[in-house]
Length: 74
Image (tube, rainbow, N blue to C red):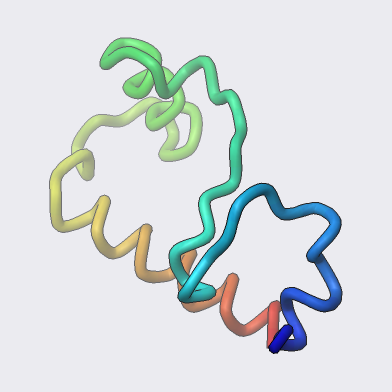
């Protein structure tokens, strides 16, 4: 049985999935492929500062992104 998501995006999916929050989008983010590039991206995002570059802030940022993505998908 095809669910609503599979019915709408089935022709764009390769393989199968069992949980919507486990879909991986294939993309290339060149700055994220090495530590120096990630720091450059972070500094651009946060005004040339590494002060907030720690696990706590990264987890908060991921949580906010997740909530916003879910809200826009609803």
